[in-house]
Image 1 (cartoon, helix red, strand yellow):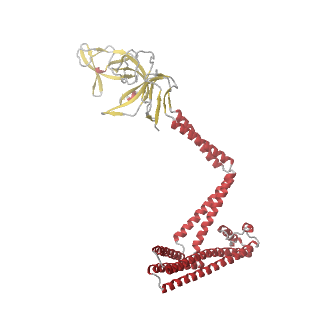
Image 2 (cartoon, rainbow, N blue to C red):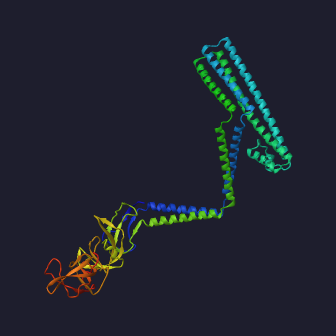
Length: 558
């Protein structure tokens, strides 16, 4: 996450104290995050309280309403599917055929009317127009007859259904819920839900009373006949409307022939022909659809609607049951976890807001400022560097041959190139094992802590200074030692030249520990032997006993 620096409160070289503010970031976004986290926590706690207290009256009422709505949707979808599966009835087919005939007559009338308007009417055309009016009147009379028959069918079916209801409700062991619904307000036809209940009540495995089974079957059949009668009545009304429209068109055509035509009349007649053609096409398509029955895709879609409605009803019932049952321990535990998560989010948001201020972790001196007001920074940005007055760390570079002998806790000294007059004591604090290779040379990194720094000294080491360090890896007091350049290698042995009675002789020696200047001689030499150093035949050196505790630069790693 990137943030913008709001202020920097220190300068290079400033002495700062622990907990002093050094810099700050813009905190508007962080404050908004905290406010959001606190709001989420409040919401989670309220939800937990609601779960623990159970459903309210309003929630139960809403659940009841959802169940009723889902049931109504299922009834509608089931009715639509049943209509598709049952196909068209004879009455529906008759009405559709009559609508096609009426549309054909209307089209012929509109075409004749247009032709007559354009050509002018003859006696024969007038007679034909009059005949069309008569035909349209006959068709209307026929349609009205079908309508009267359909209305009578509805009345008859309603009476049959009423009788079936009365018979059923007077039968022993009938479903009281259905009869109670019908007692005060006789609502027909019965819904699919009620029909399903009736069917379930006379399943063979239940061994229903024969009289009840017969009454129930008669009620279901009467309800189906009544629904079909309602459909036939609706279709008959549509046929009457079409026949009346055809008659009006035929009469208008006759009137037009008798009156003669003007351009406006011809345009109107042309529009009437177009409308009649469209009406005929629609009537033919409707008749074809009734003859062919519902397509597989339409049935599949209707079945899918039923399945969806059933699933919604099941879900609504389960939701209502859950409210009535109240929350179980698992729900309470889950919401409790949500509250805990929200509390952690608030805690993190507060910490992020607190982290918008850079606070000094210890007393120190400002050594570097890498940010400025307005800069965009991340958590990885080294903003400000502080130096501790009495704790300076040194990075040591070790050769691969030196690494095995260097251990944490070993001591030594370092002389900085810029401070030649003073040697500083140090202690090894870490030894790295990751190698660094440059131009074929392998080195390792170690760190050491400077000891006994004088805070009031005039000259102190500063970051970035380089120097030479020596680490004491082993100490041996009273060791017999010679300069390193006095030792030569011959095969597997080491030799030293000594001067005996004016003659230079070579002695094989056994070496011990060494530093950068001297090497211990374990055997082969004695104290007082004169050692000949290479490079000068006249150079001589006396072998002496050395003490590593003497005030001289100790051997070890530089």
